[in-house]
Length: 163
Figure 1: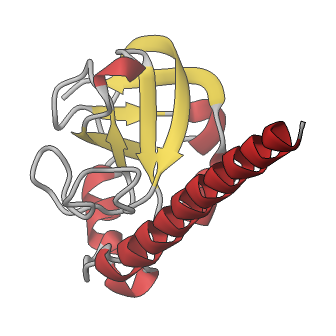
Figure 2: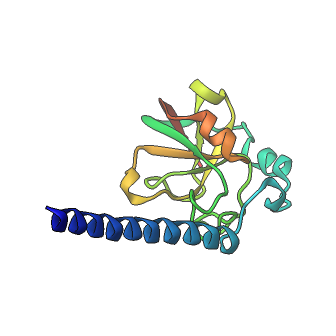
């Protein structure tokens, strides 16, 4: 019986050392990643004139809807975990700015309205989403992660405008 207790204590000691090693590895990895990965803040946002971009995209003259589709809309911000390794550049090569939207179905430059959420505000498709999101999902760029999280997930209609 004493041999079983010694074996159990030895096994317990090995398990304790194993879990300690795993814990230390995780802590070291997190500390390493924290020092290596860049932290993105609002101060890192490029200096873009969102007012001029909005003025260009919100020209309401002769913009009528050619198609209305039911979609799911989410929001994203310029953080590496929500984008790729160039979080301030869209898939079309433009810098992120107010009024940019992402979608996999519509061509770059397509103008849309989301009347149920934004009234007459015009968005321009300049970015793409992960393919697993499909075609009937839209992502709106927002300046901060908090704004994007607060936006959440919404189902609504999107009006595709004539070019």
